[in-house]
Amino acid sequence: MAISPNAWKLLLATGLVLAIVLSVCWAAPPRAVPRGDLHRLVLSGLSLYVVGGIAALAHRETLAGLVFAAGIITCALAVWLSRGIDSEDPPDDGRPADEPPPPDPDRLPGLGWDDWDDFERAFRAYAERESADTT
Image (cartoon, rainbow, N blue to C red; front, side):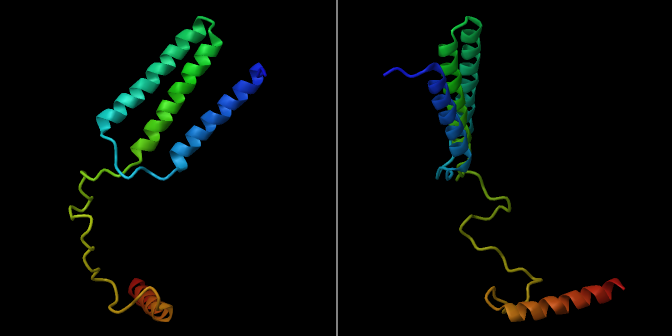
């Protein structure tokens, strides 16, 4: 059974779109890949684009399409791998990631997320104090 020229192009385009969407939407990997490795992966993808361009100029359309597809998949893989969390990077505030944040001095004591009536009363009191301060 032979596949028509347009059918394999449609399958290839569908696969490439799927690879791009998965690279953005799929859950990030648990660990980040070192930046040097990511740079080499992107450079490999760009090199495949150049080879695909040379193949296209040499009128090798099928080879060019396959090499371009490999470059797109390589770059999509680099995008997905770049989304990992780097455990070597310290948090922005300098505290270890497992340490709880310090208490907020402006937060009202005893106000929990499940106590909405208290929250609304505290918010109304805050809004009245702020509107009295501005006038």
